[in-house]
Amino acid sequence: MSHLPHALKLGLDALFPNFCISCQNHIQANQALCQYCLDDLNLFDLTRHPNLLHRPDICDAFPDSNFDHLIACAWYQAPFKLWLKQLKFNDQQFFRVALIQVIDKQLQIARQVNVTWPDLFIVLPLHNQRFLARGFNQVSQTWLPVLKNQQCTVSSALYKQKATKAQSQLSKAKRVKNLQNAFICQQDLTGKTVAIIDDVMTSGATINAATEAIKSAGAKQVWAMLTCLTGLGNLHYD
Image (cartoon, rainbow, N blue to C red; front, top):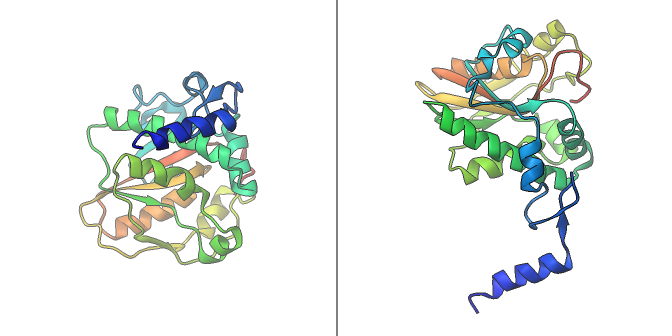
């Protein structure tokens, strides 16, 4: 009887096989990418740059960062651009599984190459109006399973108190103004290293605004953890 769940899983996998979304090879039921396709993705080399703010091209792309440390998976380009858009706007769940696999891989590497590690992890919150309209937070869908699996402490200390305009069509200056006083931190974070998590960073204005609120609550360091990075003016996603 103890082998029944495993046997059932094998049977279901045979009846309803999963296929890699990239190469169409057969894979396990809890995956969306085979190991070959996962390893073939063009991800940031965190072993060379544990803090991506020290990578010259990324430093140039985000020169006004208030946060202290940056970890990300990849540039906002194919296939990640499609996956994120399909998940966010069409709730395509197999892309969620693919993104979870990518995030898990990068976060495991990040833990190995960074001497220190955040005390708390905060998924960037949506304003209540946007959350109710959409019905889900795609950042939570992709990052929380990984954080839970890696036994990271997740906090809901950050609250978005201002219903901001969509950032995608705004200039850098207007993005900053749009996000003034957008976030408030509801927890004493004195002496803590805190990671803010989001899906795509364009100008850094949103993460900077969240960083200000978290540092005002006493945090000694703020890390930004992103699924993707893009340059300002190249993004149509918000």
